[in-house]
Image 1: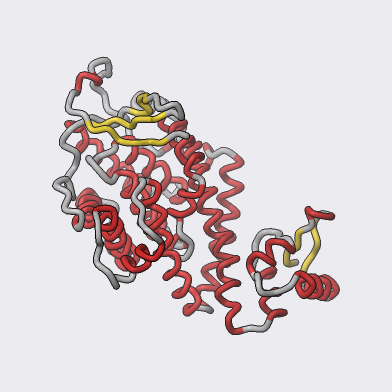
Image 2: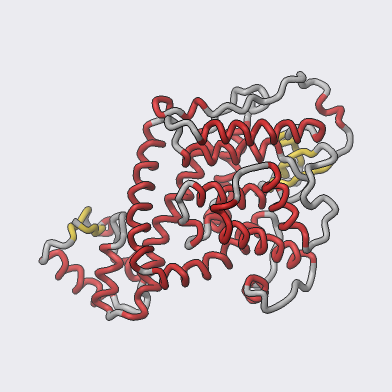
Length: 369
């Protein structure tokens, strides 16, 4: 098992062999003609799913309110769990609902993330990606835990340490020095603003590149990983992609943590030399975002099922799914409905030409026409 942990150091000699130049923050490589085909394909699918979700959200606002309540709990739990900050599910719910004060340091950290997340959910339209706002969110996130570094850039150099299964430690990545952190953050923000105004650059592709650079700067003594996920949501919401409000993006990262850190490592290799490949991390980001929209299809059908009969619930589950869905998947979404009933509805829908069947045997899936 591999873990990624920060190690704060005050000895800057580790940078002795590095030249004085700083990473160049430039996202012009994201202009459309430079994007790999597989990235374009998944991006197209995400836009299609977003359009369908926006339509449903306008028609079923109460259901989306219920989904948001569930997602906030999962986001607070998932993002903190990645950093080893945990408590029981019961305590998570109590903290998120403000029905109980934190009982220990871990719960203080969890409550701080809750507050920063709420700021983004409620005020993202008015929050731009600026140094002041980034520092303010960091301060809010660490405020309850009484951290002396809350809202301040790091005052000493740090390392990303990898611990192998046998316990051997190695340097996974060397972030920007503390003395250059403010300058690097200034350049990051300016590069983002420049790319955001470039009509040839897709905003969804820009977001993971900015977040990767933020993680490579590693601007804080504590909380860099959690801040990266908060900023991811902020940039997604501002770009009009709000699936993370209703299906926890942080939980998706937590579920695929090994792949996340592997792609982060690949994309950060040679970062200081301006020779890194962002697209490993971009692909990981897009897959997680795609999964959020896919899960939103299923979750919508589940929450919506409370007021409609079994046949209509099955039909809605299939018709609202943008991906081919199997009988087993339908059964998992609607556990109170028998396979026999699901099969009967599928037969009727096929007969009425509402859906089509793809594949045979165990690979059989169904999708709306």
